Image (tube, rainbow, N blue to C red; front, side, top):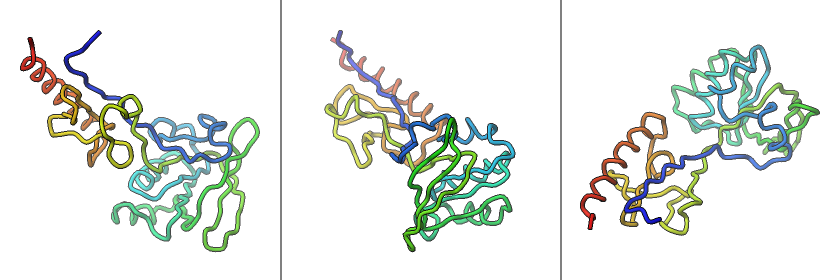
Length: 207
């Protein structure tokens, strides 16, 4: 079957750390979505991995539920918007471990411990935890078209404002394309634009 136009809207998935225990405890203490799973950690002590806008903003969101939120970040300072950082640092529930990286996740049936390394002293320590939220970026789901259209940095697809790619008749919408903001509202808008552009393309190339 041949289609005159194709719209790819496969989105993106949270980037994983690739550390020991991560896959084992995914859904059993490790999460990549605060709005999805935050309520399950009511009154708990949790950790957030990351230091960008998502990590800081989601940490603030998680304080609605958790007793304490400890942000583990590899650099000396956050990469998030200054206003969000100031709000987080002023929140009595939020603690910070700068210049630290996670090294592994451990427990029996569910996650119980997080191993981190102090990047300056090289000291490793194991911290008790009730849960870990990972916010270290996203990975686009573009494997389907990686051999069809050139991919930009990070594996995303460059498109025009009409969601057109360099391949005639191939449109990419949503989180899989190069864009500044990735939100549900922007993805829906992309989808609308792609549908209209594809319709126009088919009409113009109809035999």
